[in-house]
Amino acid sequence: MATAPQAGAGRAACARLRAVIVDDEPLARRGLEIRLQAHPDVEIVGQYGDGASAIAALRADRPDLMFLDVQMPGVDGFETLRRIPSNEMPLVVFVTAFDHYAIRAFEASAADYLLKPVEDSRLAQALSKVRKARAQRDAGTHCEHLLELLGELSGKPPLRLDEALRPDAIEQLRRDDKLAVRDGQRTVRVDLRSIRWIDAAGDYMCIHVDGNGGGDTLILRATMREMEQQLDPARFPRIHRSTIVNAARVVELRPHSNGESFLRLDCGQELKLSRSHRDKLAILL
Image 1 (cartoon, one colour):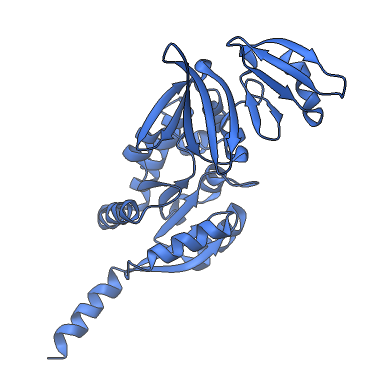
Image 2 (cartoon, one colour):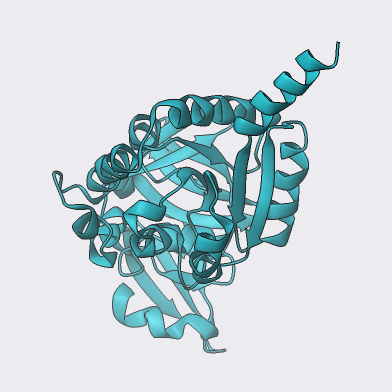
């Protein structure tokens, strides 16, 4: 009677997934840790708040799987991948609060991706993909998949892995003509030229765009910092603590006596340029 459970336990041990979580937000790491408790075959062997720490510990941790935040200060998710030797590369599930990073490419070439806040059902789907990928993967195959992903993201396939992971290749993302925005249950591909301005509303961003005979507003769960990272600051400068503007849509600038200014957009909307962001005048004029 004892033999069967022991054999089952041996198979479970063999199938165990050693995972690390790399995210600069402690609450995000804790939230993912809690959700992973529902998956007994996943063992968290390390948690790191930045890419550099994760890279330094990767050889000792020897994880099968890395949950990797795309947007981190300093060494971000893409730079982290660039620095990991191919023979030490674990399976990667990207985690992001903002789905500008070519959803189709993630689906086709990464083990999977997760959007914040992570949903239990979506995490279960991602782990299912990871288990299947581990069963059939080898290091070379996975690197080829990452190459496909990063080549598509850079807009310049085919590339060698070191070429695709160069910082200037990632900068191509910021020059893209489309922005993928999760608006409720739908994902909308927004033409950057149609964006008028963006402002913060608590934990959400309001993206004001052309449409519906006048204007439309898309609601995105993200922070101002995350939004700034996705957009070219020369095209979309931040003009206030809570406002980003499409510089191409500004038609008039009116100084105010207190050192602030007011911008008028081609749609008639007026926005305030605060004193702390007066350095953006050169972009706007």
